[in-house]
Image (cartoon, rainbow, N blue to C red):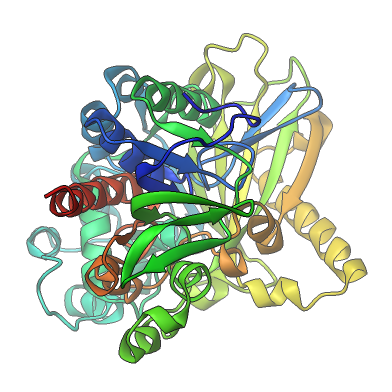
Length: 476
């Protein structure tokens, strides 16, 4: 079995998976469990992709990266495609707060509670609320609806920017959706979340990813870290392997968990695809990225419970463009209380992660000096925002630092540091990749509905099934 960094690749494979985000890992586990020879490659020094973490000060502080909230369906997915232990670590975040000039409400993010808020707080007729949720639940990915999110909200809640804000803002934070994106993407994502609330992994991302690693090794998946694929090999119109560290590794099928544009245009090359396919690929838009500020408290310090997730904004109305503005007015605080988030660690400290959506180009154009000044400004603005909930927070802080889209790009290799993959049109390119070039498959954060932890994991399952069908034709 291959895992250690010095282990040499000595065999051919049925499937090589490039990238170990949740889509790549889940596909690897399904295929390995079914007896296929699988090699999972990761350019970084640990598995997980954007589902990751980092330590500071000799592991005294641990920070989870990104907003780790997902629908209840993740329990079923993990139980079926990973194991019961991982599924049992999924717990509900029951205290989600919205604090902005238009309203201040708390919810457990279930359909029942949201319905009560809409009818009692926002005074929307119950018939309208019911009709809205019924409409969302009836939406089908295969319907050819051209309705935008903007048109969806105007249809049910005309002129109610405050209602649009509470319904749309968390999804904007979660995957970069805007009012101009297709309503079908919002309908599917929101309906998933609205069934039974928002969930996360108890114990920390490092614990869960390590449990997934153990399951992969148990299912005989070979893993090689710090391995950046140079090229996907195409021969006679189909994939036959990869170039890695100057060596050829043969494989019947390739699954890329890298960005779809990187996969097609760089790792394969335009010459291997029809002109129309390349044109559509180049037209795929990236979703926005994010900035984060990581705050670790001193040993022994605690804070009162102020919520698990807090969507906070000083901007007077809901405006997706302002969520991306360089001068931040909106941010989300994820609070990691040790007794809830990391109960297995008796010395765990309180961690707070602030996330803001942003544009890569705003940060890329800065000089080195300007970049550091803006990072410090972002940290200060975050502390000012946090003081509204915790007035004495500065006295309790042991460590604080920030990450930008350039940080995301450096560690994940996502073009422009995109935290949320591509816009909706990326899904068509991704799903049709193997129909255009036999043996080459893609799974990752595309089209919004395949974004996030649950979407990525399920997309890995979908593509693993397609790969198995393909392998069946190659073994005839």
